[in-house]
Image (cartoon, rainbow, N blue to C red; front, side, top):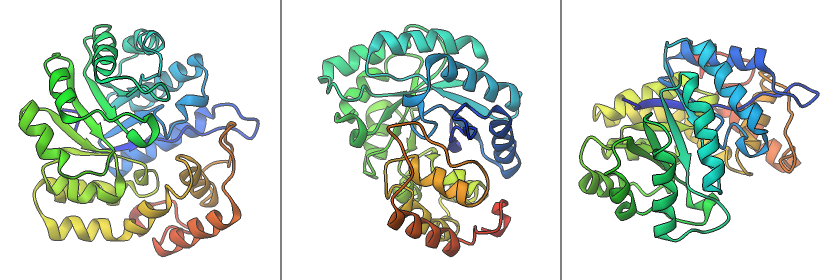
Length: 299
């Protein structure tokens, strides 16, 4: 099952702007040690839009090799061009991943029929499980529950990452698609309530900084323990709020650089955050107890 606490992992770069595969391996090991259930490789947070296709495939391959079957690995395979997403899916499928995270086409605003046809074509390329990814703030289209229900009839479309922040979508999708259809939060600020409402886990940006707490939140929320879930979520709330102060993954990469975990390197058009944003992020890191510590044991 593709459920639980999943990190939307950043892709670290060297000071020269190349993918830092040694540091990538360290980050993957860190998450395994901290209890993360799955790595989501080369999604939005992994800067999929600025990697070449070869780099995209190589980052997924490297992640699978380091994980070595110890936890799940999902790979981003989305694009605003169906043919391009099909090509990525064909290249990534043999690498040993556990499934795909397939974002809705961005920029070109497809109709409901276009969304259905897009996902149907990609699902036909591989038998591996596919998670739909609905993030209207980036794609300008909403993969509404009724379209999800149509796509759920395709055997290897097994769930959705729902990043609207609409907690009511959990039960709407479950009612239309069945209780076994996986519904994951893609919105850290509402993830606690989302899982308490029946969500099956989270694909999280905040988990880059606090994976142990995120795992505690997921475990408590999925067993219906509101007190425990809210207690785990409380130290992270300040992080949820600031990690989207500018476009993801700019804030989380700056935060990780500030903590000394990686070099602050982006690829254009992504760039360093504004000074006021940096100050806000730094205050949040201090409030969360993360400054001067790599381990989330102190977070």
